[in-house]
Length: 289
Length: 297
Image 1 (spheres, chains in turn brown, yellow):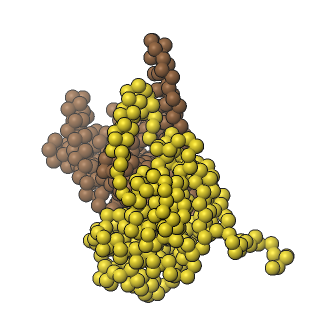
Image 2 (spheres, rainbow over the protein chains, first blue to last red):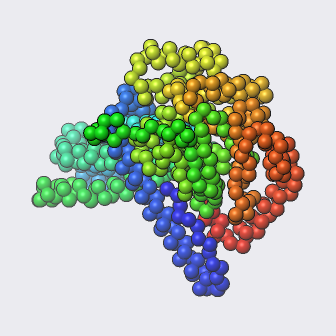
Image 3 (tube, rainbow over the protein chains, first blue to last red):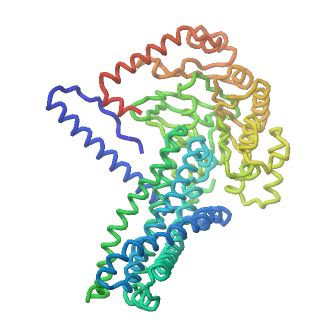
């Protein structure tokens, strides 16, 4: 969407002029922000429209799925493993002070499946795949490949955005499961192998405090994260400025904006899902300590 | 005609109706005007060359003709049907009657040359793979490329080969109207003439109409039936027309307009001094009104 037409500023002097200019700056910023949000929303609507109006070709989908899912697995697994171990390292001293080391499993695993697993998988996806998508589509924009698609009567949203959107949406839950699994494994290995916590009590406490809702809550959130990463990154690629600098900026902004959006979504989805949890379990959350 | 038919039937074009007409077209990006009140008609079978210096809006005009750029005012009609009133689906269908040869070829990096040329056939026809492969092979031969390029990626080809592959892709659906965006820019003189020869051969296809945007006088003289010359808006007064010449190549050579003569003869004249003055004016304007600088594109 084009920015609003420029209006010539009237030079004003003194404090009043300075204040008027600052108000105008805030107004400009607000208009740009609202226009950008509207633009992304329209982009998202068109993507969802094409998702349901025409079937995707297998030879277009599979390379995208491979790029998004298979190639992201090792890095997500590795970060999951280390974050599980780090949680054990950081929590152990506090739990030992009150003699509840065996409860370490419950806090590590609960943190992982509810928050860290989905957010970590989404962050790695935004960094590894989101930036690459923005750079790839940005290069296609700059070299007129997107115009070429349109000039041949093909829809660029259908060909370029929908496969990436589907890939992120379908594969981010599997990456989240991998991050959860490796985190749980890393936390256990460190707690049992290095800190010497009894494995029976470690798992018994984990089973008692972590249930299917916690796991499914993380998976549910991951769908939103995946969709947000694909839409924000593809939008940045589609609206890339000219030149190498424009492509670089699109890639950087794709990651930064995706990451901020992941955290905002995480907060509001967390609040909403906790309310849902309260409906099904009116007695409130089980106490960890 | 069946008087009881309920389905709306597209009206056949009138015999004297232009294939494409551009009426009072203006395009503005933000606060910057690019095209102002441009009107051009294109008859079926004609080859129109759009000349003009860099930045005068030639490519924007070409992209407006296929609906890739939306006009700020005015309209483009194809066989009398305004592009601006078409739905996305109708416009996509209409574009199968166009071929667009981009300045940098705009071949898809991730696909082979064969896949690039086959793309419009796969998108818009029900042809099977062997038939598509046969057409692709013929097209590659028609633009003078060896069959060995079919399995290569665009990055493995030279600039001239890429342009010819782009032309082959544009010809895949046997289009009625072909738009060339600076087809010879960046090529050596021999390869430029090869491209000119190809444009001439393409126009011999039945019912093929062409628009060639260029600043290459050799191309203009060789392929044009008619030439229009655009002038940059920034150098025109508010009431001056942006099309400063319209006529045949011979008339272009005989034109007495100093702006046309300067372009045809390729003389810088006082242009360097004018560019310096423009730059100085721009810098002074930016210093006086820093907020305006942020708002201009």
